[in-house]
Amino acid sequence: MPSTVNDSTFDTEVRQSTIPVLVDFWGENCPPCVMIAPIIEELGREYQGKVKIVKANVSEAPQTAGALDIMAVPTLILFRAGEEVNRHMGFAPKDQIVDKLLANA
Image (cartoon, rainbow, N blue to C red; front, top):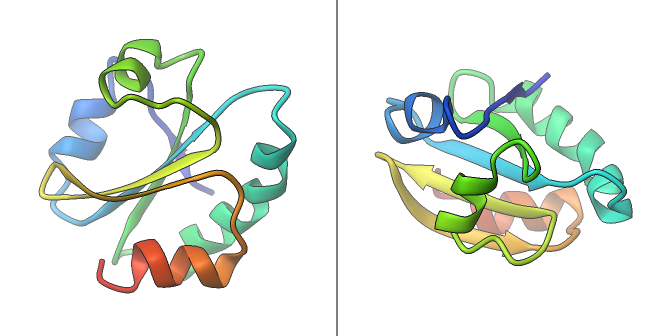
């Protein structure tokens, strides 16, 4: 299961990670977030040790969400060496997430 990050843990867990990190920014009462959650959990199992996958509730990480210009949820962002390398907004099936965000992780 993906771990959870918030404003106080984001830098340590994401920006300082030695492996790529996929962050799922989500919100409560968000149907697309509910739909994508099982995909994120599955990717967490499949990419364990290769890509760290974490979830950030925008209500619990408002400063981080604001700093990263999160305008809609879900938003998936891939970080490598602490820097954003790719982003996807909205629901996407697993194969699109893999192709767009994880293929070059």
